[in-house]
Length: 398
Image (cartoon, rainbow, N blue to C red):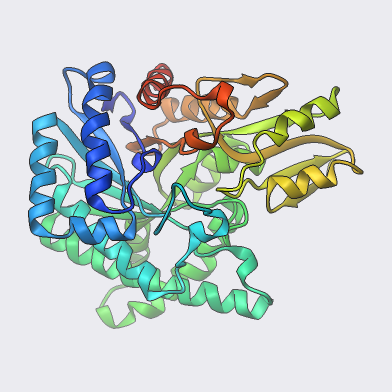
């Protein structure tokens, strides 16, 4: 739905369905109920997540035309998509496989191009701008040596530039400006704004100038091409887990002319160990579930940071080490600030969206809380009601 500072939606990765028939049936049941409560009289945007199989299914003309007809009937539209999880995302152990296949593979490239072809077809003609978020190249710990990591980054960058080439063709043919939104994440090759900017400035842009050198483009034109089609997905939860300050991160990006494709509005678990350590660790243990990775960035007593690839490892370490604070990559409901003895990074959402309201940084805002099915029972509520509550809360900020 349109707000004063961009289009607001929620990501459909909250719903099950790795093939299109399943996912579409869930959307058909949920979207009308949600829209009636959050945008009864105006068009409602949808943040569409397609698994690889669903993207293949929806590429079929009959399926795509049926979906477009349904969108028109429902007074809904798609302006952003989630191309990060390629395969199973529900009812399976995902963990680090959320990155697979990564950007070193042709499969990731082709899946992303297929998604953009779908988006170019369904994006409303009066919008002319759409984006797809994607993995931060790969999972960092799959690469055993610095040399292998460097090679993975180089191959990934070339595959991303092949997507840029396709996006330039789409723009020339349709006038629609589509952008790939790279999403830094804990333990990704690109974890935070510093690593993203370093890759963008010192690897992506120089590689692009070499890649496009035979296209009769000046360096300035190539830079403009990259700035247009490769942007940042600013996941507020991910930046908060890394203790990034929104004002500083946004200022760095603006200074360098790097665009934000979308804000993913999300909240992480936060715990301050000022007292009741044992009780807080016991409360955290409820969130140590086996489906997703829940990386922890721990602030130690001496002011340094320690990282854990999953919550279970951090809980083990806490038996013998003292910490000031933990931030855990576990997407929790936005409208709740405190979970008993635990709290959340919700204030980072408030701060980030206040800065955005003051100086809009993107046209796309997407709520992303995909963990409802693995939350402790006392935090769960009926799914559609929860989505409505999240949208209503965010609307008060934008």
